[in-house]
Image (tube, rainbow, N blue to C red):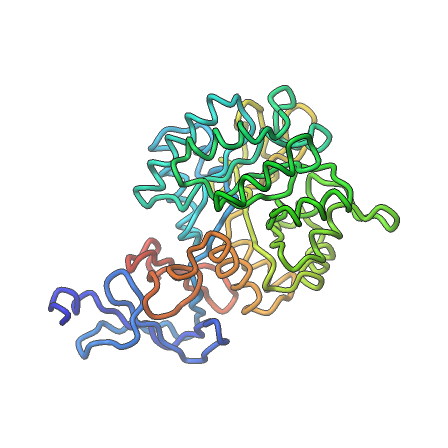
Length: 384
């Protein structure tokens, strides 16, 4: 039997277009009971009219290096929580912290530190991006710190994460790559193909070995060729693979995004930010791991080499761009930004859709898809 205190925490959000797994409900309602979505509301529930708005599930970001001027790759607890808070204010209610290439001992220590924040519920897991990547496609990673994916060293990192490692990005064509994919699959950690110079055939082998994600598809890998199709074709065609896309207008031409959605379908796309410190903060000079980055007009590039160095994207901007610029159906965007990444993380029983029993994580958007409210576990992070 619910207590009076629990009943006092009940809220009914009414009048909005509510996006459910089964479709969009006009003049729908979402019932929040404490920290969760409920199927029915008590008579004394508070009613919040959100007419003229959309209500969608909270966003899930599986690839994010920081924000709000703070870094997940090197910051202390306050820095990490500042970055998490920044992204929550932009609708990301579930967030995986990504590292960048560094010394193995540093990465292992960092994994132990971040795992504590996962255990506290501030983060949803850890993604290791590097050091097991190709020097030919290193992007914003320090070349002298790169190494082949030795399964023993991969195991060292996932052990250091104490069960909180969710994903490791690998150039699977390197020595030890396929064995490392198998190791990750055996331990329930996503093997992601990225920062790779692999051929089509090498990519197929990696997928058959257990790789299931393409790290920021199209970026940091060979382009699609008509005689040498490379990794892009292999990753798009295989139903076992989910492809990450950075929808900021810089990393991808709209035609590339359209190609990915057309070939993979909305059920195999995960929108990510690949955000670095400047997300939600502003232009200036930053550090991404050991490398200096200049952010100008919202675009992050290495000071030396001019390579794109992550993004300043937040998921609310990715959502709005997908609907208003790319003209994608709202339901497809919700799949890509909430449901699919939640499923990858093994968290779809808790987050990723607006269904009774799940966490009350949701985003309120106006008619033009600008963010107006964010709720996480029943509490307003941004109140409409």
